Image: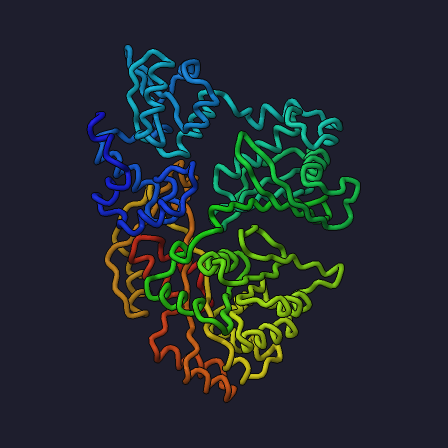
Length: 556
């Protein structure tokens, strides 16, 4: 095994046709010093974790193990310290004679293999496993998790000690809150909802955009649970009549977590929503957002212009902010001055000046935007255009040599023009300043672990035919542990991109109705949301049902 293991991972992946030399060189230059190459390639979106595992399995002859299908001997935890297992992403899963079988996220880590041999006295036989599977198995065999049921029996209803010390992680209520948050992170939830009802408390996770109730707690837990959440978020525990917002960075089982916490008084008590801010999922490049090749080329053309206004539209939770951050990442160099005004600032970006809106002291989008224009900016990002004053300043800023990026709430790209006119912006200003509009939605990806091809239904063929497309088979998930039996895992974006050309400018300046503008772009073969979505169905990324769920009422 030592022979093929000497071949470098980058060369293996190039030989397998999974990445190019250019992608390898780009990743090697941009990755952190301590980051492993495979992790960096997955993070950059050049390969998936499954592709990495498959390539290593085929090229190195090391088996791929599905740990959740294994009956793991918990006595093996005595052979490898838990800290080492967590730090190196390794877990022992079987012992036969003098051979210890160890699942590794990086089976090419020969130093760890040799260290394990010296530490345990066994011959080490590595297997490849997904990092998520390894972390799950570590918790199983080392007994790191107390069950929620067990914790509930330990919490007295008058436990006041736990809610007075923010750094307490040993009391039962602290462990319960940590467990709820850790479970959410492991299931890739973006939000945790703690909903008070008349006789119970519902814990719900939003996973891939869909809310699921994961647990119901007894009503007598409400006050202590609410107090604990407020304490760790630095909120006022004595105030229950007004909404509150807080932000906190926690370390849960060695993992740093950034949370945004919001409370809202309801008739049955305070509802709490925790937004889990995942930097790796948000700070992406435009290539990772989900653009088709043509849409990516158009988008990069928009944001690489020295001036003009580029708008991203869609409902709440459609990934608009992530796309804005991706654009800023692409444009962020020391040669340009980038200033943003946001509400709230969700992620801190190195090298970019970010302003937090604060209406209590008069710092609104409009006032902040005026101040930004006196700071010699090249690129301005406005978190959201909410009113006519902000819209007018943003438009005029784009006409005076600035590139302005922002979001606006409309159902599709074409209606954005009407929305700006409704805000009181003169049509000639819109025609002169608007470079393009990107409408975006997020759709769930089919789970690669349980997905399988099946013939397209008659209804699906009919839907595709109505858009001038054909389809014979579709890719659907059956449901497995990795996707919580939903058949979907992860999300990607679908887009429609409106480019304001000379003819479109004439229509806008003549105050043409929305239907006339839409007919013009249809004649130009513009791909609407439904078209981009159906192409992703053809590419086995998502399902027809998911596209119809997300775009119904927009472009069909």
